[in-house]
Image 1: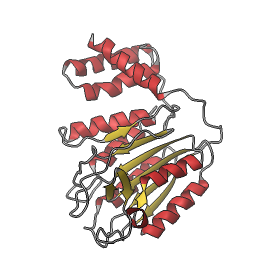
Image 2: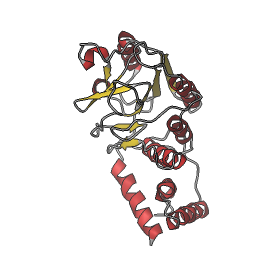
Image 3: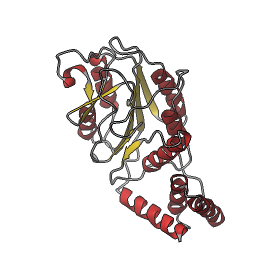
Length: 287
């Protein structure tokens, strides 16, 4: 019964992703990764740079056309994002990742440049980069689909707790490192954090798609932190895109995957079972 319910749920989720027309044959996978660490008016960070260096190496093997940037002031963020977007062609898949401090006000989220000063009288849009502006740029360049990843829910005196939730945007997947209005600490050693490591694992799996990446990141981070950290994801109806070509799954292998997922369900580990049900359902044989 639980297997049937799990497969039905996975089937409905995949159907909800939509099957829009494929991107043009010459569409590229492009990634912009920004790490801001050396803040002048906020505590300095070490993890963002480690995150971006590791994630860039992983994406380059898929392959993505990867652009990285570090420690950007406000003008530098605007210029870097604009220069990157000028390379994007209609139909491209774009992955944008930011690691640093984030800020929310009036239900809007902002990515903080290294010169951000919470005591400044400037408006938020004049001293930080709005996530809404990034979404607008993606729409203006008519990307095929996009994934926005924000590792920016960090605790800091003088900043609101975490980031605000967002509504679905056309053809755009959005993934936050923590639930709305929650913040999470960085590793004491300044290394790659659990969220970005889970992202690296998920993106590199054969057959990975933006929707499956979000589900698997949520599951891995939740397991690794005993439920203390819960990444927040928004999935719109959009086309299916694989980061890595999917493996050929035989009927026997699919059955084994279903049995493994069913065992996890019996143990009430539904977060661990869902990615397996998705894998089996997408292979087709289990349906």
